[in-house]
Image (cartoon, rainbow, N blue to C red):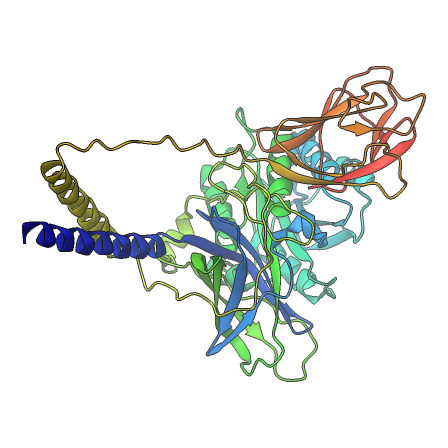
Length: 520
């Protein structure tokens, strides 16, 4: 009788523990933070940041009203997808800017060198009015054009010029699913005798804009920089202030890495019956049937038969979104926010996601998003502490019962094997067949050596190349190239590479005239 009772108690306890575990896992699912969402040619594109999603995403869906649409493409980073990025650099041309010319040139030059081949630069100034200097600046000339700015404006209509820049940017024809980013470079001091666009009105427009706003704050006016940071925060962009701990070049690296590492995928809206402005959309990501992340946003949906792109509305926080700031708060500004991008690994034809918390790339993943039914989304996390507490208490009770009833039994513990170290998935594009080595896909956690030596990871088809010309390795989440032979002719995108250089996915590496491209 007693044994039967104990058996029933144990079965019930184990069942309850399982239920608590499943519920706790669902409530603790990660967060999808849509940064930009828009519709282009009947496909809804979402640029997003992922938080606390550590499992391979095998299923991605978006829900609009009572309709669900599966992902029509791969979940990957902007850089991996090869989507174009357009930067509009809006530079303060006022008489207070000459002391910052060196930082301006350093920032622009580094941003140009760190951007991929699908990046376009538009150069404009703000002052008495908004002016376009060039609509297509070659990356190699960006630093020189910034250095030549006169800085002769006596009026700084900061808010009005940002508003005009948004008008200009938003009327440009979209290049496919491009990510549009505006970088305001200014000391943030507003001087507009005519009053101009009110701060509150500009703040609301930035929230609704298709353009992602970033800012590089210069100078020491803390109040002005704070207000600029609040505008950037409303857009979900990055506000940076160079100083003793942050160089202008480092700020450019942060900006290019963050944009390139945003996750992006598309959803075919064929058969969608919803239309209109500010439509709520819900995203769910799953890993083999288990919910791993969810998030919400709002978007303008074109009506039936409309071919033009519908621009995004402001992304909504999945939980705990703050209300609009009061007038007093808007006048004084707020603390600028900054979201870190997620590093990403990828396998050809296979979606990936990263571990954003530490910036390291996720290990190679296995499946593509399927078109199955989306997992049920949890309603909230309010019960999570209660479930954790109940689970802990129940665990203690079971342990006491087991120890009392089985004094003669000794449990055997088995150490779990250490998880494999995460790496960055890399594929070598060898269209010219310059490599003698057959392997072109790697999970980069250490280094890849390049040369004509047969022991190199990438063996060059050359009798004159150095035995070991260079190595490709991971350093703090960045992929870098180091030249090992000072006599070697090593070029990156046609420019001589010396010492250590940060690589971007798709960079053209030439050694002894042999060219290949690492994709990661």
